[in-house]
Image (cartoon, rainbow, N blue to C red; front, side):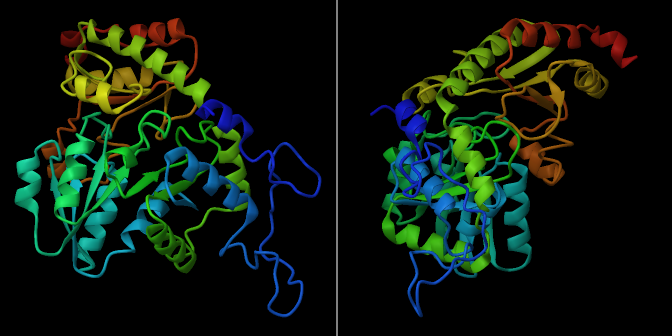
Length: 386
């Protein structure tokens, strides 16, 4: 059965009482015991809930994992994974990761709980040089946020297996339909379900999918112990969004490719970052390990900070806002928004410049998106800098 069909049918046969074709929302904190020590499988929603279980089963099946944990946010998913490591463990993380990931890792390092090295994961020699006796995992984003760099998952999978490390992949920029990290040796896959999986910008959520039953058991215990689990209604919203994921992704990618091609020929655009363009340094690798190039596009503009502000203030279809993956198109400035929490020197080392703009390309009419960017970019750099 193809993913589109599986997602359409997801949860349809979970209501044994009334055969509802949509999974019910079990919006309750606790469950009645049948007798002393006897339940119907659930006792307290933090420990387990039928709505959450349905979402977790769907995500695990889609990803090809042994199990999943639905969490309150993408950051809760990351926190749950990091809680698995003993104090003093060393993590090697992508140097151009999401700002929230960098912020949390740096906080844990300052508190003496973890040691962290930020490395360009495209360079295996640099990864090897960063190894320490206490290294426990590699934390990967591919495509990366916001520069859409592509990392060779298969090479990193071989590397982590050779060194007995966990390979953790944040797959938020794509989805299980566009990239399956377990096929390349990943041990854990992380999502912000707020983004493409939900796709409607009306829920905050996250998920962690484990390759093995043993890892899933550890993650389930950690989520219950730390209380990072997602509520029933949030899980139901993600389940609803998943049903349209395949058709949404097709339009996201169609529009993103058109937008990237338009930007690539615009005189006020310095550089475009989109793996679907043959000029992108990771294009061939992305074509091999992904089933599509996604809906995220970043670009740098000519004309300095005033030009950046002009573009951000001028769009009418693209909304100036953080987040991504919803049906609506968003525009943001990583240096002052999604990656503002990163230390300036870390942003510079990662190549996240002040003239970088990130687009989450939605599902609107392609011509409207291009027309919006065309009018926003209609400035003379020399004039705008004066």
